[in-house]
Every structure is written in C-alpha cells, then in structure tokens.
Image 1 (spheres, helix red, strand yellow):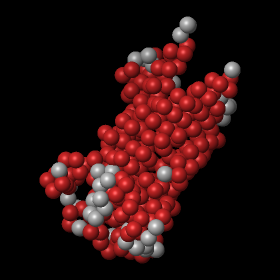
Image 2 (cartoon, one colour):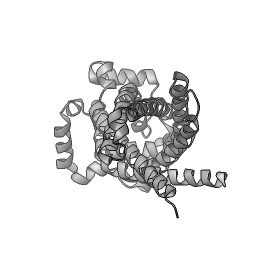
Image 3 (cartoon, one colour):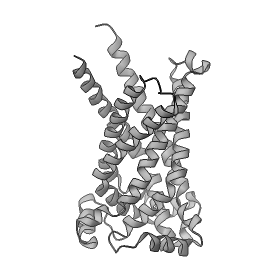
Image 4 (tube, one colour):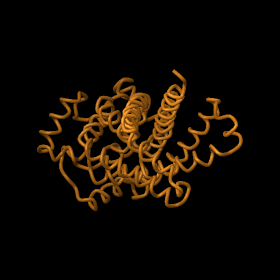
Length: 305
C-alpha cells in the first residue's frame, strides 16, 4: 500500500503545483512584461528605460492598450504550469524524505535542500527553454507577433532554425538553478525557524498566522535569490532578444550593455524592481497555495471514513 500512497501524494503535489503556477502566472504577468520591456529598452531606447516604473507602464498602456501587459501569457502558462508543478512535486517529495533525517536542521541538511531544488530546476529549465525564448520575444513586442504559433514561426525563420529557441540557455541555467537553490534553502530554513516560535506554534490552526509565516519565509527567499541572480536574468533577456537577429559573445554583449547604460553595474541591475516585485508576489502566492492545498488534503485524509 505504501508505494501507491507515495504515487498518489506525488500526483496531488503535481496538481497543487499546477494550480499555484497558473494563478501566479496570470496575476503577475504584467510585472514580467514590464521587466522585459525595461531591459530591452536599455539598449534600444536608453532614455525610456530610465523612467520610473509607473510612468513606463502608463506609456506602454497608452501606446498598446492594457492587454499589452499580458503579452506572452500563453508561453508563460505553458512553461510555468508544468514546470512549477514538476518542481514543487519533486522538491516536496525529496524534502519530505530529508526532513526525517537527523541533519535536516544542520548545514548538511540545508545543502541537501539546496541541491534538491537545483536538480529539479535544472531539468525543467532545459526541457522548457524554447518557451522561455518565445515568452521573452513576445513580451518585448517589436517585430515579434503576439500569437504563440506565429511567434514560433517568426523566430524559426529570423533566427535560422531550432538553435534560436535555445539561445540564452546557459544564462537561464545561471539564473534559475542558483535562484531555486537559494530560494528553497532560505524559505525552508526560515519557515522551520518560525514554525517553532511560540506565537506560530500556538496559532498554527489560524490561517492568518500560517499566511504570515509562509509569506515572510517566501519573501526572505525571494529577496535574497532575486538580488543574487538578476545579472544573469539581464544577460538572458538580451541573448534571447538577439536570437532572431544574430549572436554576440558574452564579452561583446556585456560591452554593449555597458556602452548603452554608462556602467556595467547599472546595466546588470536594469529591471530589478519589477522582477523583485513579481518574485515576491509569485513566490508567496505559489507556496501559500501549494502549502494550503497540501494541508487541506492531509487534514481530509486524516479524517475517519
């Protein structure tokens, strides 16, 4: 009976991950579009990229309408829903095993948690990279058509075949793998510390206290992971936007960013505000939804039939 239960738990984790991924993707897509547009404008329209985020958003809505903020939602959903579902299910399954070991609260346990997250994210990042490239180009607007299939055809023709869909893969891995490792390690450790505090221990049945605990743990993980990986995100965006028009060596790309921004530091932090806001919200919604759905199912399973 145990294997069947394990398989059932993994299947439910997939469903919870897909649900949380779908909700988060639609709600926070505008911030992803703004981040991509700001980073693209840094080279194409440097003056526009330096506007405040509200003004930049207002200009985009004035030019293209409010639906422009949801450009790229289709590839985002196709990438995020299965990707987050597989990631959360794998992490949840492996973390449950780690949590029974003696060194879970030690440095070794923390390193194992980070390794679990890194392995899960690496697999999903490689498998879904074509959707990431499509998403970036659709969000950026320009010559890329908004439809998923028309955008795929355009990128294939302009980029010279299938290789265009994998441009920026190294930068994507350099962003996503450390992000997942850092986020999950910080989230898990912070959540473990908070849950043993008297105020949370005594009020664990209260949704407001659970929400505060999970959101704070998620915010800590999102903040640290986003700051650490944002330069790779900038490089990824530029490489994917170049996928349809040519290819630059990393050194040449960094030189281009520095020339357009005045300094490399300014260029590699471009779009940090919308990405940080999105990651804070995305992480909180994803993990709160996932944890609460899992908790509800556990509670129902424990009830006598």
